[in-house]
Amino acid sequence: MPGCAAEASVLEDLQEIERELLLLARHHILPTSTHKQHGRTLDRSAYLLLSRIEAEGPMTIGQLADAFALDVSTVNRQAAAMLHADLVERIPDPDGGMARKLAVTQQGLQRLHADRDVVLRGLGQVLGNWSVEDRRCFADLLGRFNITCEAENGYPWPRPTRVSDQ
Image (cartoon, rainbow, N blue to C red; front, side):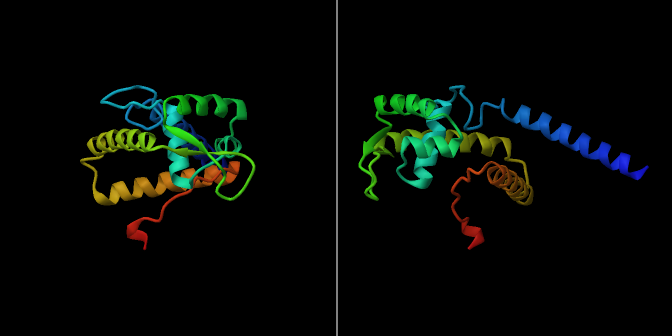
């Protein structure tokens, strides 16, 4: 019964992937971690929202809610905390729309970049003994996985073109 063996193999692969994703989410080195270590100052939601606004430019609360598949009230609370901390500011819509948009402040950019530097240093430590090929393959597979998830759920993340891809 080759079909049964193939189905068992697929199930085992999916179980292994599920376990590894679960374990991946617990590592404090990742940008989604809420653990404040090594000088990181932003909580998970601020890091994610600021990263998205940095990648896409000023966004409304509704656009952010859609981008993360979150309730508008949730994003509104997170935005209020970021406004209070001077990480973002409300600006008129550059395209002339009625809703005001959130733009990252200079302080917000500084803190985002400082936190990202901590994350990159940590990733550099973890992946320091990996070959260039293994790092590239890992990045490619993670990108492919995320792009597939985004397409499935309808919320793509803007990605820059890699210098090596040009």
